[in-house]
Amino acid sequence: MNNLSAIIITLNEENNLERCLKALDGVADEIIVVDSFSTDRTEAICIEHGVTFFQRKFDGYGSQKRYATDKATHNYVLSVDADEVLSDELRRSILEEKQVWSAPCYSFNIRNHYCGKPIRFCGWYPDRHVRIFNKQLTNWTNSDVHESILVSSRNDIKWLKGDLLHYTCTSMEQHQQKEKKYAQMNAAILIQKGAKIGFILPYIKGGFRFFKTYILKLGILDGYYGFVISATYALSSYMKYKIARDQMRKSVNINQSNH
Image (cartoon, rainbow, N blue to C red):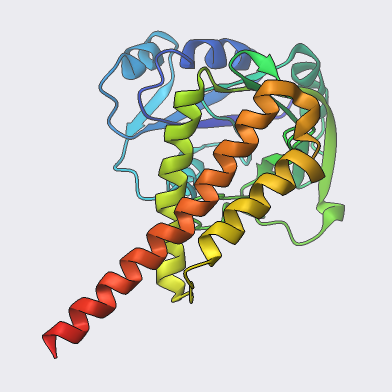
């Protein structure tokens, strides 16, 4: 059987990490955790499970995962988040494929849970992503947020049966805080690109994001949580453009006053 490295990046994940590590037992031949200086029991849990543990200042999701990938000693790498768990069916699929790796990259469905409930729509399922890859052939993008594996052709990807169970948010407040963080990071990207943002654009972007999630992606069929997810996404999109617009205008005003 061929070997597989699992990589996880963490920050204060004591409530999720043990469940994730137990599901990797018997599937991953080594587990690499790159931690952003957690202040809870994250490190202690890693030590208890014999994890190879590193600490590194967080400088973007893409960069952090590239660092973790570089620390992996095996060619094939499985990337999971601390709040994700391999289902039994996915474990079997990975173990079977480990007998003879037959593709450069592998994807599988991610079943996202919100406040303990699996979400069927909102664009959250099947939510297929590449999560196993040969690091000799590809790696992560350098994106600070929404990082992904660089894939040159769909023919390089093999789909595996089984779900990766993602316990994304245990409360609506947690989701709102996460989206606030993403909005700030995405706003920084817009500023870097020098995007032109008029007064009305944040409202248009927020409104369309709600329409896209709730109507086009059938969030309405997920009931109350479908509405909450759609509204939270809408606010995040609105804030992304508003933060970028306000900061760019502030910068222009400062420059003008200096002259």
